[in-house]
Image 1 (cartoon, rainbow, N blue to C red):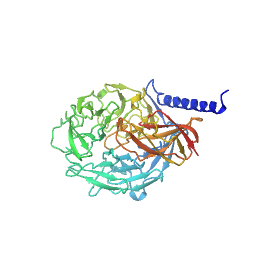
Image 2 (image 1 turned 135 degrees about the vertical axis):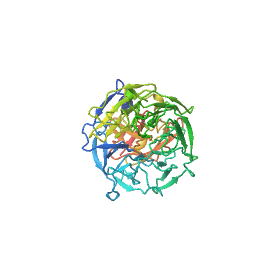
Image 3 (image 1 turned 45 degrees about the vertical axis):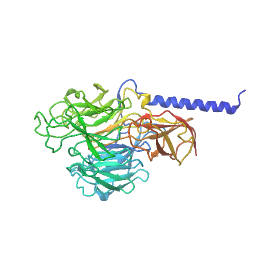
Length: 515
């Protein structure tokens, strides 16, 4: 007869395998068709920009106010549909800050930065106000603007591969940017003679896309430069040299120059440009005079090719888009710049496909819509004209090659509640930034989250991640790491651990959680 201890160990191993299988199935449950769900208990306010905190909760901005909320998934699950909303700290009253159309990012230490705003208290302002949120202390601290800046406005922003937050000056020419010192909350201003050299035009209306090379791609909007209204230039910024260089012609014109004279107004709008898991950037366009064009940039060859026009004469002026876990692009389009009703499509890398539309959303334009990729693999949609939140489930699932991997011996086999640990592996930052908009809104999720699942109960617990070794995307075979804190309430005993990037989980590894 086998010893009881041996039988017990085998049962524990079987339970671990079962939990791992359940976890894998949970991420690939939506394989039949796209679908939408709504938040079970709708918000009582108008939600706008959302940001994914590193403990798996979602920070939600109450539109045109100083107020913020937190969406927490259902206890023991990664179920955001049945999650709960609760208020968190507001901007300090002394700031008098209630922005619309602002820059934002989650920083490597887990804090959140919000900067600028095209409007403040519903007044066109191009404000230079800004603040940083500490989720542990639940408090906002005002951040002074970069020296000499009188405008930030609806600025673009990006967290560079080394973890530095770079903020655009929306409106000045020659174009400027600034780098945030995360420790001191001070800025280094970059100009056309130092650190931001060679920018073709203003930053106004343009979005920034982080590339696998570490560079930042933008599609030029030709704002206030005496160039052809048919211009198709793109540029890449090298953070190491501080220089912009041409990335070539997008073939199709993507910015709105009113080439047909139909609106008598040049809006300069452009759609988001999304890095996809196959290494291409899908760039979308705006057009007052017909369908928005698209273009595809191959990050390996550095060559642009023309993409298909957006269906039904729609365009992507001021519209959100997100890369789903199956590699397709979810996008919200308009029948002309900032017109309604909006229509959602899915782009599969070759063509657009019709999908179900969110119930109760229309008629609205896409301008006030925002997207966020969740750890569950869903895409969260908010629109400030509606007191509701929607969750999109893609038809397919991820390819195994897209998963983060935890290397053998690169994680703690035993952890304790309240302790801080390091896990290492590959592709912890994912192959994309997740959700895109351009100027006015950024909700990137190219950073790792950690989930611990108790083997006996199957209950899931987010750890809090921080101190990411890189903020690059598509890091390939390079070894990267994150620190994580095991949070109070995490159940003790035999468990598994996964790392998640943009909704895609690693294979699970076995750990033991001590009290």
